Image 1 (spheres, rainbow, N blue to C red):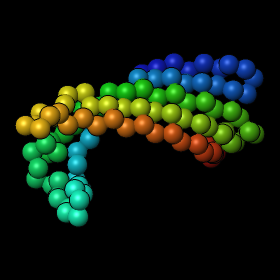
Image 2: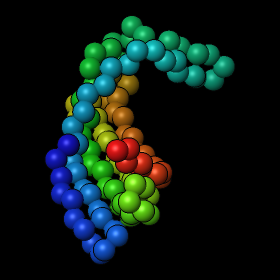
Image 3: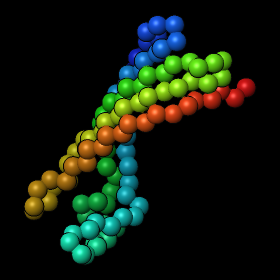
Image 4: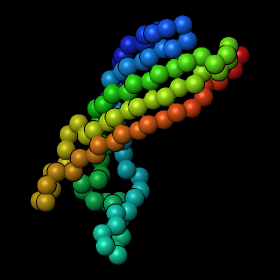
Length: 104
């Protein structure tokens, strides 16, 4: 994606970026009541799905080789799949927290 990287204070940085991505369903099932339906071969789930979204990351340096980060990302379907019962859209939200290590 494309975005900006800004140092807020001495040890805190923020990154904001817009994203475009593509995904393909390789396998999966949907549960309806007590029944499970395979999504493989279903025309609504076949093909490549395009997504648009954004991501915000906060980074703070703990020492010379370690950063702590907190991230929020959101993606949604760029082009919906049409069905007789409505539209199929995906809306993903991700919150992540972790450590980044620099290996020299």
